[in-house]
Amino acid sequence: MSHTIAAVSTGSQVSAIGIIRLSGDDCIAVADKVFTLNNQRSLLAAADRRLYLGVLHDKQGRAIDQCMAVVSRGPHSYTGEDTVEFHCHGSPAVLAAGLEALYLAGAKPAKRGEFTKRAFLSGKLDLTQAEAVIDLIEADTADAAANAAGQVGGVLQKKLAPIYDDLVNLCSHFHAVLDYPDEDIEDFGLQNYSGSLKGNARQLYNLLKTYSQGRILKQGVSAAIVGKPNVGKSSLLNALAGYDRVIVTDIPGTTRDTVEETVMLGSTRLRLLDTAGIRETADTVESIGVERSRQAIEDADLVLFVCDGSRELTQEDYDIIDLCSEKENAIALINKADLGSRVDPSDLPFMMVVSICAKNGEGLDQLADAVDALFENKTPCDGSILTNARQYDACRRAYEAMLNALQGLQLGLTPDAVLTDVEEAMEAMGEVTGATVREDITARIFERFCVGK
Image 1: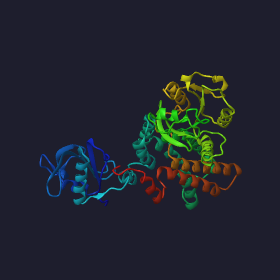
Image 2 (image 1 turned 45 degrees about the vertical axis):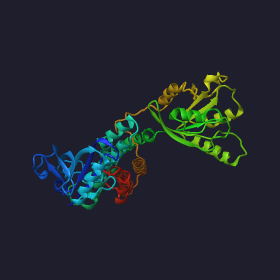
Image 3 (image 1 turned 30 degrees about the vertical axis):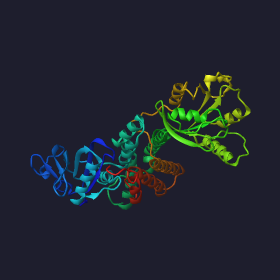
Image 4 (image 1 turned 60 degrees about the vertical axis):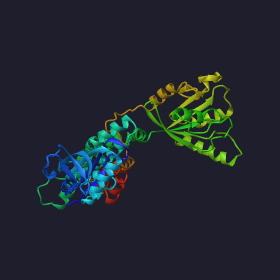
């Protein structure tokens, strides 16, 4: 038997509707102690998935709220257990009082992610679907939400399950022949599985390739704003952020460390890094900032090189351009367009050059179009993009183990030696779906969740 848990599942802010959720073997009986239906019937007799109007009350019988209750009996519920939800008016005080009444009636506080964890343990969701729930809650863009929703619906699970099943079939066939030599079992021929191994390895490789897009989809594009001092880097960050996030002065070296701000530019989420102006300096603190700027260029998904268009390019500009030259994604911004331009776009060795004025916002729409063009989604955001670092690592290990198994086949190794790699791949794949995941890893995964989900 599972004990009854309860939590508010709609957050702590004032809203029109607030939901209190319960799950567990005795949850309907617990809920019945604090809820009186308007038709005077017991909640124990309520039909599944129908809304009932009634009064939620405390232990003394005082009314907390007039609200709706809905019962869903297991296994046809989110958690696979009996569940009850109270749809109340969204006052935090009302929800807190209702929760307190349920605790006094026998429910226990739900831990972070405990509802979804129960859904996973009862087989209602595999681990790819369960992890996608929190990704859906935390999604910052429509594309990220669409991909997470697809994974909640089982798109990723459907891609991975056949691969895992093929590995299980291969291993079970070998061990069946080995353990039951007198049984009428088809002879095991490892070469017969070579084609399926190659096909599965190819599918995993194609999935792994989506992770670079998936990481950006989930985390946003890391964009370093770089240039020499006083070209308008901080003004650009402020313009994109929509407020004065950083101090702007005419004094060179004002920005001495990297400053981060997340913004939406067009349809792309950017994690902007305003860096210290790159130049030779004897100032110890500023030189540390300059070194961090150089590191930001190396680590960023996108580099925004800013120059002062009202002045001719200097050697400092060209030195920074050299630092940006190896970046796949880089855009040159000729700033201070309101002062006239002494820099020709052809002077800048970048595929994309945009003239802007960070002070009045001129050219920012063109910058948004350029960024969207660089980071447009090449794979449909339907749940088939790998966004989870833990899942990526497990799939990578499975892929490498499959390659080792195929190499063993080519070298003519014995079946038991090749099967060692196949079993390693199978175990790694099981970590993705939850088939072989350890209890401590499972606990860590659900710690990411919010209470009530």
